[in-house]
Length: 596
Image (cartoon, rainbow, N blue to C red):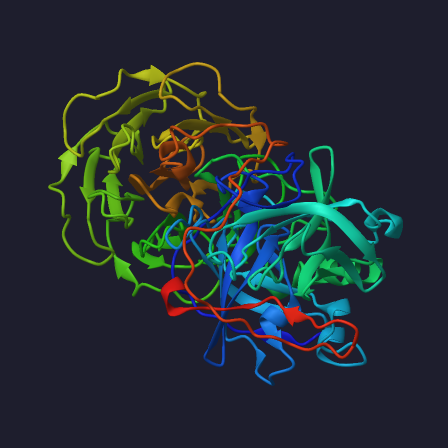
C-alpha cells in the first residue's frame, strides 16, 4: 500500500469555474465564468510544505477526491516529503472570486512508484489524490477517467487542459488550452508548448478528451521544457490504483468514475433518517432514493430524539440528540460518532417537543421547545440552559404539531402548526401569537409526517409530507395545497425519525441571505420523532450573475489574453536526468504573499 500522508487543518471558505471547449483556435484562453460545469470541477490548490508555499491545479473525481500531480503533494527531490496543508478552491477565478469557497485536505496519498523504486520522482507515476474534509464534487460536478486511450490518437489528436497558470498569468485565474498532442507512450503524453501552453501552477491539471459532450481524463499535467509539455498518461494499472484510493480514509466515494458526473441540482436541504431503536443516522445529499452519503453512524441512545442544526455557524447542519427522560441536549459539530461538542444541558419539560431554528437570524441554530398540551412556544437564542429569549407565546391548538421554517425568506426561522386531523397547515412569519400570515391549506394525509425544507434553493422553506407506512417523501416547492413538485421517493424505515439538513455545507457558501437551521422533532403524524428542518440559502451563481450569458454546455467561451495581474512569482526549475535531450521543469508555482 502507498504511504498515507495524513495532514491538514481547517482554514477558510470555497470557490469555482467554466467555459470554452468548442473554440477552434489553438492556444490559451481565459475562462470567463467558472460557476458551471466542467470548469467548476477544476480546482486551484494552495500547498504548504515545511514553510514552502506553492500553487497547483487539480480536478474533482467524485464528491470528496481531487486528482493532481504527486510532486504537488510530496517533494522527493528537495527532501521535504509530504505537504503540511493543502487548501482546495474549486472554480477559483481571481484572488477573491471563490464561487464555491474552499475545502481542506483531510488526507493525501501519492502513487507508491513515485516515492520509491526505479521511477521515483518521474513523470510516469506523477499522480496524487487529496481527500477533502467535505463533499465538494456534489455541487461542482466531477470528471471521468479513461485509461489507455489509443496511443495512435496522440499523434495529432486534440487534447484539452483546464489549468491555473502562474508565470504569464496570475495563478488564481482559470484558463483553457486546447490543441494537438504530439505523441505518447505508457509513461507520458507530449505536446508542443506553442499549441497547448502550460506554466508553473498548471501541475496537476487534467488533460482530457471529449466524445460529444462527455469528457474523460487521459493524463495529468506534470512537466514542461522550453518547447514541450508533458503529462502522466493514465494506463489501466494507474487507473486501478486511483479507483482503489477513492473509498479510503472513510470518505464517501461515487465508485469508479468511468464517466463524468454533472453537478447536483441546487437543492440546499436534503433527507436524513434516524433509527430510534439503535441511535443510528443515515444522511443523504440529494432528495432521491439511494444509499446514505454520510453514515451510517451511531450517535445517541435508544429512544432518544433526533435534532439537527448548524450549532456553530460553519454552514454545515450536524446532528444532535435529546434524552426525553431528562430533556438533556447533546449537540455535535460533525456528522460522526463521538462525544458532544457542546456541553450537555437541559431545556424543556417532559412531554414537550424539542425543536431548533435560527430565531434571530445570526446564522447559528439554537434550541426551542413546544408544549403540545397548551400550544405554547419557548424559544432560546443560545444553546445552553436558561430562560427563553423570546417571551413564551401560544400559537396553535392542543394536540397540533409544531413546524418551523423561513416561510418568507427573510433569514429568520418562525413558527407554524399542522392540525393532524385535517392535515391543515397554519404558517406565521413572526414568533408571536396571532393569525397565520399564509392562508391555511391542506397537504398530506391522515397520520402522515410533516416535514419542511428549502428543496429548490430559492431561499424559502416549503412543505413536505411522508407516508409512514411506505416512507415515501412528497415534497412541494410552494406553501399551498396541490400535487408534489418532485417525484415521490422512498427513504428510511418504518418508525424511523425523519429529518432534513444541509449536510454538505453548500448552502453555507458565500451567503447572500440566510434562513438557517430551522428544524423540529414533531410529536405526531405517526412518527413521534419527525424532524422538520429548514434553511434558505440563495444560490450565488443565480443571484449574482443576472447579466451572465448562458451558453449550451458544449460551448465554452472566454477572452484570449493574459491575466489582469502579475505578482512576480518565481519558478522552481528541475533538470530531468531521465531524458537528457531536453530540460524539463516541474509546474508547481511558488506562491507570492499577495496571492494568499
